[in-house]
View (cartoon, rainbow, N blue to C red):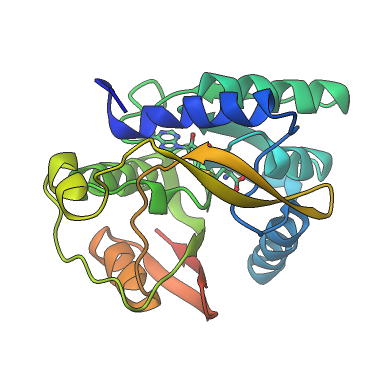
Length: 242
Ligand SMILES: C[S@@+](CC[C@H](N)C(=O)[O-])C[C@H]1O[C@@H](n2cnc3c(N)ncnc32)[C@H](O)[C@@H]1O
């Protein structure tokens, strides 16, 4: 892929290809929207969050499925995504449901336009794993910390892999040299859509999965305290606070 912008801007291409292949939305592998929402619902129950006094921000909000659920529940919500097409799709989804939706196109590694100490809850559903360079992950976690209020809660739901250990990645060039010579090449992707499994062609994008232990360590290093870690074979859910 001939790409001059930072690697994660390539998500735009992915979203455009999804709609050009006739799919209404994208899910992460075979994980359904309903599954993501059910997990988030458990997080809300865990902390006893109530719409009356909870302002929520979602990082890497994609096409707005979590937004729709939270806004239906009455939460004040802002979603951010790097991809203009994802943001447009999210706005359309909410408009169709006749719900107010607040979305911003922006880069979560630097969110100067947002004030600090402002949100009670931050949500990351498969977003941290898409940042591969140490500095990007570090900046992102620092932004979450800045934007959250004291004792603000954070929800992470990521793919985890025990056998991939990358201690340090200083640049995207290091990443492609090591793992992804074919950045952007098309490959078959299994997606879960309208309750059916489908195979579509999408560009390969960089991902940096970690083990549960490594995710926890990364969050601790960024100044968050984990309250709950749910370990599954390929997935990791962490509830933490600032
Ligand atoms: C794997 S998708 C998950 C989308 C959505 N959260 C979901 O669960 O369906 C990761 C999302 O993060 C967004 N993203 C990746 N890097 C980003 C960045 N630097 N700033 C903002 N959004 C980013 C992508 O555009 C994409 O929508």
